[in-house]
Length: 493
Image (cartoon, rainbow, N blue to C red):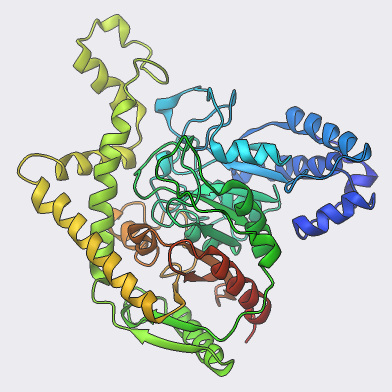
């Protein structure tokens, strides 16, 4: 479908900085970059990473950017950077369905704030990516558009819910992608795909234009092959927004300029219960313990911290998020827009039956399971026993986390208990699937930033990462230490 010129055949990508240098010295063009990624997308369609590809639109914008650069116009921070969007982020006049039948052929009528800021800095949006329906899942097998395949081993899951966005970066189908992280949906697929995945502090990036799953947990996150690309993208999309009252008013640091600043010896905590968890793969445990020894040898203080609430984080997370999902997804009723069964109007159904029919046929099984669970925990007689109690546990987690950060600069954990597992392996056991989130939901419950950096290879041939967290709005130090550790420890020993 897409032809490649000889010039485009020579296109390579390592980082935004390198790409911009190549643009300025005439070694490549934005058009060549877009052609390169369109060719890759066409060759790897079977991975099912993309739902929509904006080929002609991307090429036209690339040509415009090339002309502007030739005229001497200064480059935007993301000039010509080819970016993909998870199918829960609104892009005006483009499809957005949350990978769900219920939204049908709906097109967004406005831009998400993050998208507005990408475009203002001259990014090229090449398409929207597959995901678990309404971001509910850990494998990208819960999409109305079919499962996404892990490009490193197509028999394995890419992780979820942002699996398509992760594979788009992993398989060189774009430079950077945006996902969303409600309980690990950026960090876990980054871990499974061997790339970098950042979930910023809750309130660091506007949620305006992000289709809600659980509003007090959701945060737009970033996938890239390296930490500096994540830093530069975060610098663009972060910051105050009049359309989202939960966004912090704090000024956004110059992440990209300070990313390589030398760090002093750090005080690092890890949860003893996490590394002793029977759910954790022995090889992952051994390698993380080995990394801890290396960190100590390099002058860092690394200590185990008792975290007695670890067994409560997953049930607390699922009580609260399903309750919020039950409320948020009540707006999808088949009346104003989106899906409705073809023959529903012929039956002259009462309004309540119309809602039931549209929602029963429009939502997938995992979404319906979570809506029903959330409705249950919010119901009379169970609200205090479940929802109120879960909110109390969440507050205890926040208080405990504050105490940890009074003594330590960072927390390290595994990102996931195992490397990427086989397609279909856990689909019949939702409890096992939910427990796979044991190490990632903590950061969403407490609102702190977290990143997964790909430091290791498993003996089964799959990569896996280390999860690092810092205190709220300490993304700069998180990115700095992640960059240092990527350079120092990646795939070593």
